[in-house]
Amino acid sequence: MIASDLDTAIASLRDLIGEAERIVPFTGAGISTECGIPDFRSPSGLWSNNRPIPFDEYVASAEARREAWRRRFNIEATFAKAKPGRGHLALASMYRMGKVPGVVTQNIDNLHQASGVAPRDVVELHGNTTYATCLDCGRRHELGPIRTRFEANGEELPDCDCGGIVKTATISFGQAMPEDAMRRAQQLATDCDLMLAVGSSLVVWPAAGIPLLAKRNGALLVIINREPTEFDEFADLVVRNDIGDALAPFIHH
Ligand code: NAD
Ligand code: ZN
Image (cartoon, rainbow, N blue to C red; front, side, top):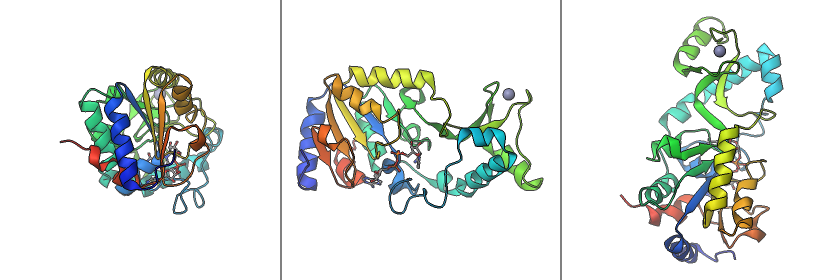
């Protein structure tokens, strides 16, 4: 059912959220657009001018790595000033009430953690761009020192003491999914009674399979996206409104 207008959407959400015992949000870039972080696939999104750099290219080519770091530092000011939006705050309220055992996200912006969800309860399917890791030994590297050296020394690339390549802690196209996060996401989806798919175009696999897994296991499925998605026909409720507008009534301080 597609909610006919915002008030109907909010009333339906209120019923579903009120009746649910285990709500699992599955979030995408759309929940963070009001925080100033562009998504990929909206008309104003990043996709067209920034062809994603596939994982094998990053590993094989120093120039690809320099380009990846240039882009990362270009967008740093945007990430650094982003604060959780109304969608994040509403989900964090449900979490505090004990209704949300964990938040599954495709986002890499750390805003669910910033909204008050404990880091251990944020399941990041595509990693996190606010720090870097070594592809060989897994050691964490901070972005600040990497940037200083990159900018002072003619785009010097970071490397790890072990000799490994350093990359933001995100999952690129062609890179293996994080196994532990996938397992936890599947578990949360299987055990929930309400799945809220918020601000995802639901076209990036295998992440997009998580909301469907919940539906197949008996959960009710809500899709909140201002544009149609391919899964709308499977949803019990489709909300085509702005995410912040639809979820603001569920913020409790
Ligand atoms: P996407 O860009 O493919 O889709 C975002 C969806 O959100 C679109 O379908 C759009 O219609 C909807 N949307 C945007 N703003 C909205 C709003 N205010 N209200 C309602 N709907 C809104 O994003 P995706 O499905 O998450 O896939 C992109 C991938 O790129 C992700 O897997 C993620 O790893 C990465 N990414 C992350 C961020 C971030 O961390 N904030 C930003 C861009 C891309
Ligand atoms: Zn290393």
